Image (cartoon, rainbow, N blue to C red; front, side, top):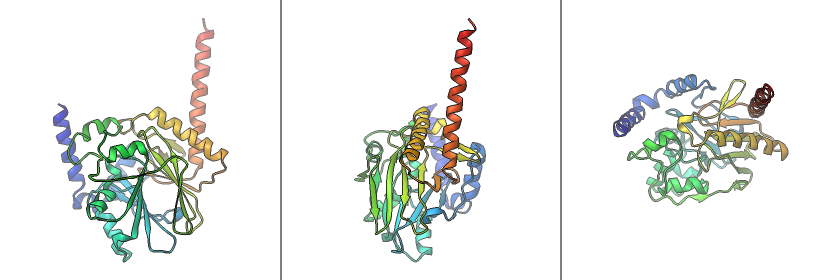
Length: 298
C-alpha cells in the first residue's frame, strides 16, 4: 500500500512540475492551496517590502532580494523546481546572469524549498547555501526530514530533499550575515516544522523596511496566523510555541518588523503574530478555567 501511494505521489508531483502546468498558472495552483488552507493567497511577481520579489513555484514560493544597487541577489528559499526555470526567467528579464546570485538562505530542508540551489550547484555556480545544522544533515542525505508526508516522499528517488555534493554553510540562531554595505540578514530559530527551521530578518534594504521571512513555521490569515498543516510538519506544538517565543523575543528586544512573509501564504504585518500569540494565550486560559470548573464540580 505504501509503495503504491509513493508511486502516485511521484506521478502527481512530476505532473505538477511540467511547464504547461506550473509555469503558466502558478496563481491557479497556489490559489487552490490557499483556499483549501484558509490563508492569504500568494501572488506571483508581487513586489514586497524590503525589495524582495515573490516567485510562486507550484504550491510554494521563493524570494530574490537585491543587495543594494549592485545587481547582485540573495535568495530566500529555492522553490520546488530542480531546473529553476522561473528563477532563470527572472534573471534574464533583468539582464543578469546566474552569477548575480551570491547566496541562498534556506528556512528549512523540505523538497519544495531546495529547487534553486539544487539547480545552481548542478550548473557549477559559485554560491553559498546557508541552513541550520539540523537541516543541513537532511541536505547532505545524512538523515530524513521531518513531516508525515516526508516519511513517504523522502523514500522516493528525486523527491527527497538531499542535494548531491552540497557543503552547506551552517548558520546559528541569532547570527547575522552581511551582504554588500547595508543588507543584513539575521537568523532566528523556529523549530517544529522541521528540527532546524529558521526565520530570516532582513534589514538595511533600499526602502528601509525590516522584513521577517518565516518559511513554513506558520501561514497568515486575514486576522492572525495558523500552523502549517499537520501532515507537512514534524511537530506542530513545538512550531506553535516557537512562534509565540519568537514574538515575545522580538518585542522584548525591540526588533521592529514591518512585514512577515511566509512561504505558502501572503504577507502581512507583525500584528498577525501578536494576534496569533493572543489567541493561543486565550485558548490556554479557557483550558485552565475548564479544568478548574471540572475539578470544583466534585
